[in-house]
Image (cartoon, rainbow, N blue to C red; front, side, top):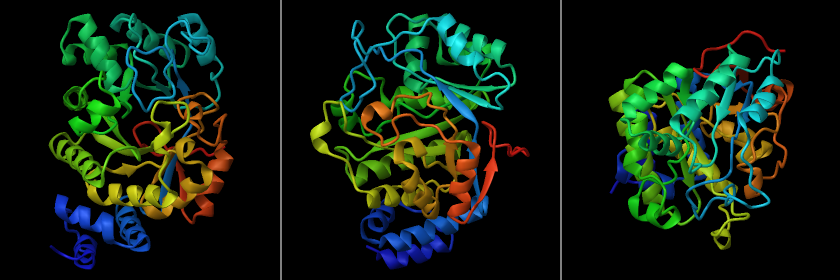
Length: 361
């Protein structure tokens, strides 16, 4: 078995990490050395740039067919805390952003038992009617798999109908942990790892770029995290379809796994750094500021992250309901640029597809 020092030298020389070497490096290397390696790799990919965008979320419902143990967002139908926005209610939410400069709407929610594929297509069309120049990044692979199966069509046909309605990208949610045994414990009735990959693989074949995520810091081991990242790397080698990877920290408020607690910030930074090193073929690693909080996000930029997500404008409840520190998440462009420059990097506004935008107001 090679030492972490030898493995680090190999990584610095451009070697691709194996499963065995990744485990040694993750477990044994000092945090400062992982940061050095990840920052060096980040600079090769994006130089001093750190990306952000102007976005908002649309969360049609928190009523969900599934009852994942880690989830603090889901509510059963009839609960006083459940919501099911009508199309007109969502139209009013969307219309608020006309002329605001937003470039993306991110649509995710619970897997509602009654909503059809046509409903989700109509929702995208409504957004495009109100905000024709805004990119729609919509629906996790688990949402997509369910709505498409319910419609009785193939994944390819279902995705094509959504693309025809105006969908331009797919977020990375629903991945959780790919290891089937861990997944069977934390989300036993949720869509499978195979379903997640089928949706993303097919989307890539249709020319749709997607993101990928990993939920970490619960019952999984380092081996499970590495397996997860390696599976993503393998698909990216095949399809070239992933734009960004987002490690998602498990937050323990208000769910049935609360006794587990949360991992330390040092674990967050190690996970970001190792994600950057293992996923040598994924262009961008995102430190999602809503999940980490602003101070940890700024530190994350020294550990390989080159994206911090967007302005959000208090439009998502998924992490605030799980105990994230910012209960009404929003950041101005000025605040985001100051965060990035304060960490010694150049803030660059992007669109959904990582095209750089020139305006900064």
